Every structure is written in C-alpha cells, then in structure tokens.
Amino acid sequence: MCSRWLARIAGALLSCRPLSQSLALSGVVLSSWHAVLVLASLPVLDRSLLHRVAFLSGHFGVVTYLPPKPPTDHSYFVIDSAAPDWLAEVLRVYNWHVLQLPGKSDYDAINSTMRSKSAKIPQHRWAELDRYDFVVWFDDKFQVNVSAAYRTISSWPPHAAVALHRHPKRCTASFPDCSVMEEVDAAVQQQNRYRRQESITRAYVREQQRLGRQLAGHPLYQAGFIVYWQRHRQTDSFQATWMDHIAIAGINDQVSLFFVAQIFAESIIEFTRDWGRQLWDGQRIMVATGTFIALLG
Image 1 (cartoon, rainbow, N blue to C red):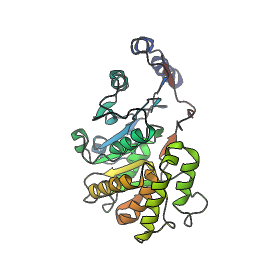
Image 2 (image 1 turned 30 degrees about the vertical axis):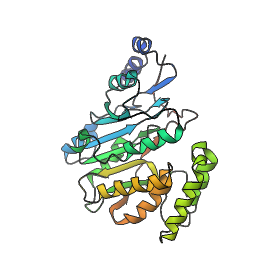
Image 3 (image 1 turned 135 degrees about the horizontal axis):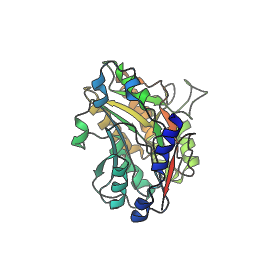
C-alpha cells in the first residue's frame, strides 16, 4: 500500500508536462524529496520547534540543478533578482519560499560563487528569516537530513552560536595533523575557479599564519552545511567576521572558515549526525536510490 502511494506521488511529480512546455526549461533538473518524512515521529519535545527553524539554500549564475526541498513549510531559496521569471515560478510550484538578492551574477564563476556567500551568510538581509530562531543553510547540491537537523537543534547547548560538520572528503585520515593546505591544494587541482584565485588564497593563509593562527590541528569543516542559532550574541559577529575573511581569501570559503572557526571556537559545536548527501558535483548528478528526478523541457 505504501509503495503504491509513493508511486502515485512520483507519477504526479514526473508528469509536469504542461509546466515544462509553458516554461520551456531546457536542461533544468528538478528533484522531489526522496521520501515522505513524518514530522510527528521526530523526537522533539517542544513541537513549536518545527516552526522556529528555517531551511535555506540558493543558486546563482547558470541554473543546472535545484535541490530537493525539505518537507517543511519553512524552506527558502535565494536567487538573483535579475534571474529569469520562470526560475521563481518553478521554485514556487515546488513550494519553496523565494528570496531575492539584488543584482545579477552574469556568467562568471568567480562572481556567481562570491554572490552565493551573501545567501550562505544571511546577516539579516531578509526580514522573512528574522522570525526564526535557527537557520539551516545547505548548498543547492545537497540533500539535507532534516530530521538530524531537528534532533541537533532540540538539544542545542546555550553556549553555541553555530554548528558545523567536518568535511566528508578532506582530512579524513590525518586529523588532527591535517593542514588547511589540504583544502587549498585539492580545490586548486579540481576546479578552474579556484585556480584563478590561487595566489590570493595562499597569501591569505600566510597572513593568518603570521597573525598567529594555526594551519593544522583543527577540524576542517565543510561550508555547505551550517546551522545558525540566530538568538546567540556571537552569531552576528561570526557571520560578519567570516564575510570579512572571504573578501580577502576569495571564494574558497572552507579555507577562511578554517581560521574563523579558530576565532570563535568557544561558540561552535560540531554537528556529528548524518548531515545528508551530495547529489550534484558540478559535472554529474549523483542521485540516491529512491529519489525521483523530473526533467523539464
């Protein structure tokens, strides 16, 4: 019975031909949530928590993939204000709340990546988010584990402003002896946008070392999944400091996060639960079993 019910949902999601024809979305990939999450089953004592947490994602530049929407009415997606009208329409069809960042990214990878930092680090840019106690950011290439986020937030310690998860691919065998240079070197080898900024990123690392910050011996966190407690007195300062460092270090925000996390170590907790999974790496779609994909166009 359950499988037939899910099949009907999948069929409805995959039969959006009138929408695809009217919007003519050639090459755009949309994904529904891979399973039905029963919120009533979550181990949350305070049921109001479900209305105090916002899930936030976004995309800038050329749109190739839109992530699965978390199964909550409090999900927000940030786009350029100059993005084509069909993008906002598609997001609303999939029940996202759309937020807009003034301006446009054009087609330059540096520019679009830098603009994405203003969504990842919201700094009260959107009044819609201010009413939430917690904001969970996840990159648009991720499928976030909503229940794990709720579980972590339900037992949130009072000293913490931010929760961060260790990078799943870096420093997995060498911690605590791994260096931030592992991230710098790997990023430069993998993507041209990071090679274009290699000199300023390495100069930033040298300056942090000159200031007395350590290049090794600390967790290397991923910057694609972050939980902010917006009521903590250090959250605004953390976000402002990180943005200042990004302006100097460049678009590889995992490098700057390595040092900012040292500055705010007393206000950071490690997110130890399963944060989710990566569905898109910029070249290919990595879809988990049971995830429904709708190709429009």
